[in-house]
Image: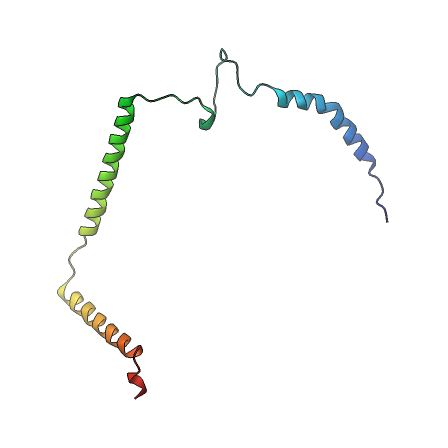
Length: 114
């Protein structure tokens, strides 16, 4: 069983062949602009790299260290700033832990088989 040929297919192919020169010219255009032309917007990874001075690099590292130091201080303060728990909650939590520990010991032993 053969499929009938699409009459529009030949027409499309002829148009594509006619436009191939145009497409090739568009693709073949200079990707890099001439140096005297203004560059315009370019994605950051295509921009020419401007080397930083030693002082600028040191300042950047200094700022980064300060940011990290401040973050460490914030983390430490957040860990220490828990409000003191009431005595009652501490006692009940300890009792609950003791109970859980005992139950766990019993569960993993064979004492319950006797």
